[in-house]
View 1 (cartoon, rainbow, N blue to C red):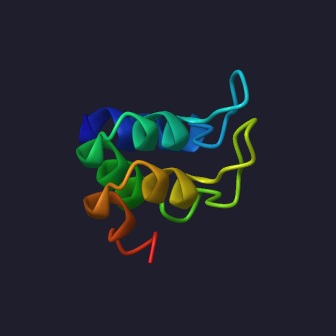
View 2 (spheres, one colour; view 1 turned 90 degrees about the vertical axis):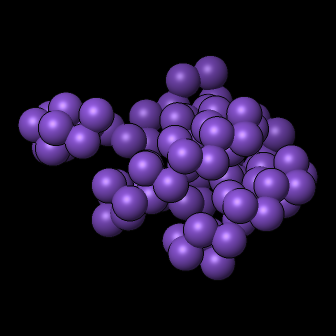
Amino acid sequence: MKDIIHQYYPDIDINHMKYGENILHIATKGNHTGIVQMLVTNFDDKLDMSLRDPDGYDAFDLAVIKKNIDIFTIPTFE
């Protein structure tokens, strides 16, 4: 996965919204801590943490709602 990310990094729109959500929203809602960690680690400089879903929640809000302490303690979320 890391090789693919590094190969296509310049072309990846990590903040792309589809149906009002981006990959960070989906991973957070699904409690996929490992994927959230991978996104933060590899795309920290590109991630827009302020993007909100149709209900008005950003990724941090979603982590709190899901009560996923592992996600909202990831350094970018703090």
